[in-house]
Amino acid sequence: HGGWPSETIEHDRDNIFVSLHCTTDFQPHPIVLVNTTIERTGWQYDKEILAIINHIVQLHVKLARPHCSNLPLEKLPTELTEIGESAFENCEKITYVNIPSGVSEVGKKAFSGCKGVTDLSIKSGVVVFSDEAFSGCNQIKEITFPKSVLSIGSDAFSGCSELAEVTIPKGTKSIKSGAFSGSKIDEVVISKTCSVQQDSFPSSTKILYYD
Image: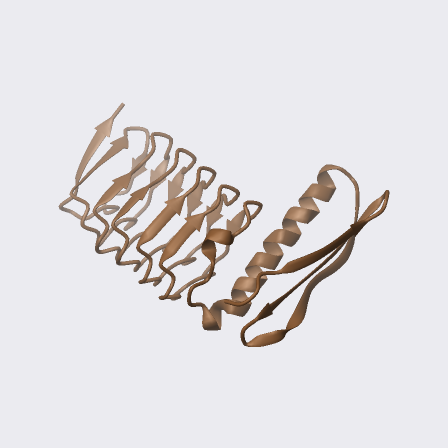
């Protein structure tokens, strides 16, 4: 935890000057993360700004992970497009995860072993939950996936032993091996167009398909 990046932005007619830095509780002096000049060139300018924001958030997470209790996940910027592999793995004191609408992919093991998570909110925009994304999060009881979700990876929610209810949208294309293994889901309703691997759910789960 600690301070989120703060920025200094100046501009003239043709360029924008960006300087970002952050501090953490264990590194109290400002760390310069970005100090650069970007030309104003339409979509390329926007693309570079997004790349900077993603870089800053991911780097901040890596800096914070050794002391990752109570990370302010609800403050992740909407411009974030991906939560990287093992970004918050084994951060057991996190209790609430709110994935912003700008995120299209939740990386492998991104929140694996976050045993304190009780509340998971997923905004529309997320497309892929990678393998083991939330594996071992054994206090999550229900999940509503937004319409944007196309793929739920292998063991993505395996070991979520309190998970009893999931809502799978019609547009989801694939649910891979072990995705919800070890859960307590009694019944789930899924579109016939979704490819569901045989052991995606516990053997006791009743799967109802609809057109």
